[in-house]
Amino acid sequence: VAYLKKQGYKILERNFRIRGGEIDIIGIDPSTGSGANATLAFVEVKTRRSDTFGTPFEAITPWKLRSLIKSAQFYTVKHPHLPKLLRIDAVGIILNYDGNATSIELVKNIS
Image 1 (cartoon, rainbow, N blue to C red):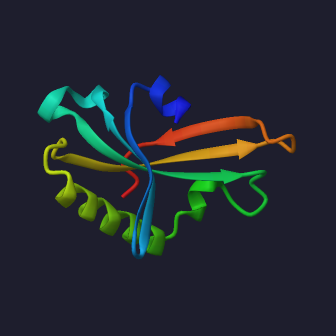
Image 2 (cartoon, helix red, strand yellow):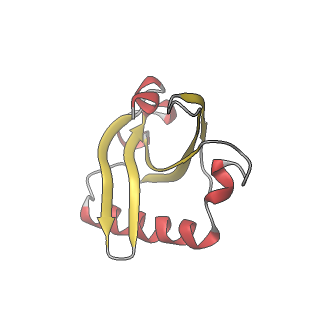
Image 3 (cartoon, rainbow, N blue to C red):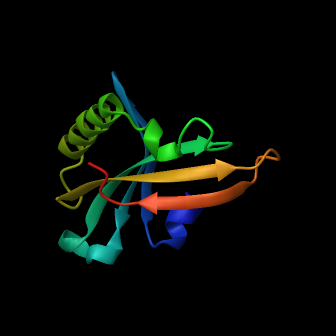
């Protein structure tokens, strides 16, 4: 969340859950504009201790992406006052063995 805030995101919600899906972070990315021109971003966060079994982004399977899209659609129906431009982003985090982040990467529009 702190990383996204540094990127300018306004965080609206964390760990939004519905039956069959979860969104780690929901926020507004004002870099695309303000007000109605801003983008509502649904952010999946993946953390790994190494890339031995693939990068954090490789852990976002087609099934997970479908689940994110379904959850995002549900959220937008329940919150019609939010920006209409939608996007699914991902944050990949690599931790060292002390639990400190050695790498944080944001990829916008993964869908």
